[in-house]
Length: 107
Image (cartoon, rainbow, N blue to C red):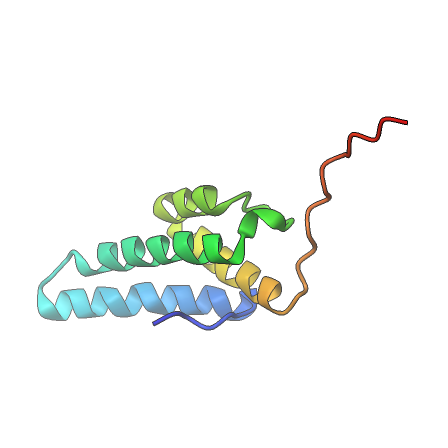
């Protein structure tokens, strides 16, 4: 199930609660791998969702789906909420497009 688009003040607590709850489940089930699976699963979801949204068309600071996915794998607690917030702005039409490349206007 895909998380809903959300602004940054909601995305940060959502990410923290997601990792804390997965840690609690991991402890209760004696399965320490669960938080890692949450990070891997959400990072992969970010990749496919960012490709679907065509993330590279927007001025986000996240560059492209590959970069944001690597960011999620390396610094999930920062990159995942950032992506959720960016996704929220894209779906609401609030994220500006990148400038088009200069044309080859031969006059």
